[in-house]
Image (cartoon, rainbow over all chains, first blue to last red; front, side, top):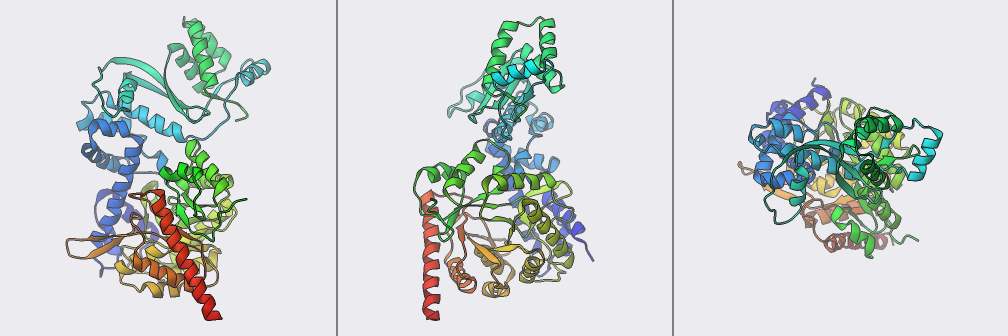
Length: 253
Length: 286
């Protein structure tokens, strides 16, 4: 007797490979191969749709037909792993680096990483932002307070000016962009008004980010920034803007 | 006071209609949201909350994979619970299907073999789901494109047993019954007659299908949710209303989405049929 485990393992295998191992379990009076194709096609269509929604600029750059070919290869290498479709597509930036036909588009992984961060930021969990008042109160109570990022925050290491490319592709008529190799960090997050913002961040802010990610205190991060010889005045302005735009969250949130 | 009630038919909530639903007066009874579209936070979740202040909302899941052999995804369950707590829906529903196994998923509803083993697993998962969200769920009958060779139940008997053992309700998708009847060569009315009539059917779905002709000349009906409801589905709907009484009804339209007015027009058609059947039943009783 075939178990449900065996049937499901076989079905999933067929859908992702196009093979027909599960025909053995099916009613042979129906034309099973053509009917199994329905699930294969639905999966291909569904996952392509998910990726097209998450990566509209990548699709625009590659054109729709080539994007579909790319997706077909991606799906085989990286099947959907969760029922929550919002998590499908996170490996596209690294896949673009390794896929032979996209390797020549050196900037594309950066654009894809930006799109993925934007997509994830839009639907990240809500949280209460840290206000200046909260920050001051927190620091007065605990000088070694650590800052926490809003769940929507993504920090990206970019090699090229992908943000310029991404912005240009928001237009209907896209003009040529001069490609610049300029390694930098980018911050992507959603504000309290549910607007996703993207900002290039300074080296000083990058130090703060790394410190926060390592669980270090705000005070320790400030010492590191000063020791690194960064312009503290510029950092202050950047930091206060980040606080007012909801990059950090309150402990209450 | 909320003027929308389940006595009027509802429509599936699509992102492109959300703002219009919030700003214009409509004649629909309720809206149904796909649960997974509102996981997380941000604008989509806020809009759904706003909509739930105006319309009764039902939550319809497509990704929990209740029929999977290897246990439910606990994070997925947690997300649904959070959404249910937030929105307080009228009904929470899922499908008689599976879509994930051993860390691999598909964005589709895959068929369950109607065996004793599958029933035991499905019952356990429905009980776990209901326990998690602390309310009854509804299970929707699938669209079938193929059938399994060695089974212990018909689909109707599987559903009847599931309801008896887990105390869940049923969401009968009339379009799915039509599609399955064509694809598997079964009698759609006999299907409806095979479902026990004891108040377990809590909601109907109506939608449009598409007919694909294969190379061998075989016609397969596909549940695309991309067309108006077909006359034979309306007819079967009236038949179901006569059997199960007046049941909240929803129009699904998920691909090639038309203007909101078109969807509302379909919901009004459903209302008219409900009224007609009610009147006829009343006249017969008198």
